[in-house]
Length: 286
Ligand code: BG6
Image 1: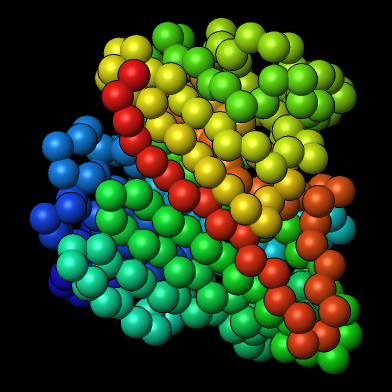
Image 2 (image 1 turned 90 degrees about the vertical axis):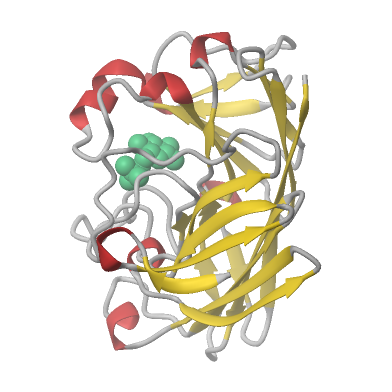
C-alpha cells in the first residue's frame, strides 16, 4: 500500500496485495482500479481522462453527491454534485490479510455551503479492496434542520464488447428513459441488450444486477443495499465523441451500472440521523 503522487501529481493510494491490485485517488475519493488476482481489470477508466483538480475523473467510481445530473435550480452548479470535485480526507487505510479497508471523510465547509447546497453534513466512504470490491457511502446530517440528498456510486465497468453484453436483474422494472425525453417505460423479461445510446434510471429497485460478458468470459455482479435506483449508461458513438475526456473509440469497452438514490428516491435526513448506501462488486466465470 503506497500513498503518493498519481496521474498529474494528484494524490493516490496504490494497493498491491496477494488478492490483487487497486488504486483510489483522494480527489473525489475516486476508485480508479480494482483487479482481483488472476482476473482482468474490472473497473474502466478513459485513457483521455484529465486527472485535473478542477475536473472529475472519467471512469472509475465517481461519487455523485449531494445531487445527481444538473442541479435542480442552479445551472452554474456542477453536474452530479460537488463530491467528485473535492479532495476527501483519507482517515485510515488498513491491510487485513491482503484485504485493504480504506476510509474517507468529507464534511461541509464554506465552499460547500455556498454551493447551492447549504447543509451541514458528514460523509464517510468506506472501501474494501479484496476478493470483492465493497463500497459504503454513509451520510450524516450534522445540522439542525432536515436535508435531502441524491447519491450515486457511478461505477464504470470494463466489458469486452458492449454489443455482446447482457444485463440481468432489472426485468419488469420501470425506468425513465433519458434518451427518449425521460419517458417512463417498463423493462421486459429478457436480459438488457445494448444497440445504441442508453441512459436509464431504473426506479424502485433494490435488485442485484449481473453483467454477462461472453467476450471476457465472465460475469460481474453488483449487490446493493440502501439504494432504490439503478442507473444504466453507455454513451455510444455521438455522445462519446462530444465528451473531451472520453476517447472516441472507447465506448464499446465500458458500461456503467450505478448504485443510486435519485429523483423520488432522494434521501431525506432528519438532524442527527444518517443513511448508508452500499455496493459490493464480485466477479465470476460465465
Ligand atoms: C450518467 C447520466 O449517470 O452520467 C448521464 O445518466 C451522463 O446522463 C453520465 O451523461 C456522465 O455524466 P458526466 O457528468 O460524468 O459526464
